[in-house]
Length: 174
Length: 180
Image (cartoon, rainbow over all chains, first blue to last red; front, side, top):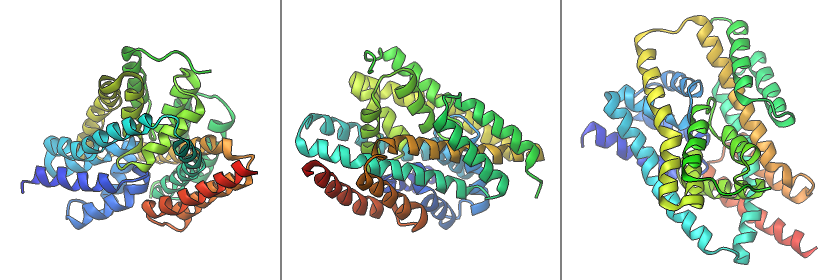
């Protein structure tokens, strides 16, 4: 198989087990990239940090893995594998979900999903915090941003810019 | 509370903004815009659709763009939201990736990146707390949220197992609440 086909296929398979979304599938993705001999864990971590500092969903880290392996065509192949098949599936699943409209079991399931989702998103926050190096400065930033974003309606970009400035000053070179 | 459905142009523009402001992950920005600023969806429906996207395979935020786009304008809406969310950020990320491989980063930029990464975690925490907020007054539902959190973040169970355990428990709790 060509390298591009391999990239698309591997990321498609990964997307199919990516129940629960981006942050929760990161460990699997990093292991897969390492097992394929595509990139080492440190490089993967720095790519993930780069996508966090760029606009768009963090899942775009797949584009950087593809870029690393096979240039721009690789970035597109990896992204297509990761994003397109699962999106088509989501489209038809949503149609099914809506078709059952007001069926009692669907309402019960929706109500049951709500607290589970809340818990999982909070967990994803912890996983993302762990993916970055944990220091007192990073913990302080994480906690204050969490607090401010819940308690106030402050512009989220302002919080990120503030965190970038604090980080630029406070983090010591290693 | 829910405003009239967005036009297809407004849908594209909304997801373009979400994608462009999605530093540190797009979900916190998506909830802020869709629920709090534009009122396209109520908090409950947003959480329900997000729940659906989490159970489905694939990245949540991308699934969410497809599902919300479809909710308002069918296949065209889904396509418009998907492209709006991803096209520009994709170009930016690839450009950054190329630059990153050519030139090493100065120390201050590394520090700024670490700061953004820490803040991104905080935004995700805050969004989770807001989504879980309706569960707050009910000990049972709060317990379910805590269970899902512990299994994923502390026990490090694969997500599929977390869902397989937490959803049945939540259904049971739900049934008890309805009966009492």
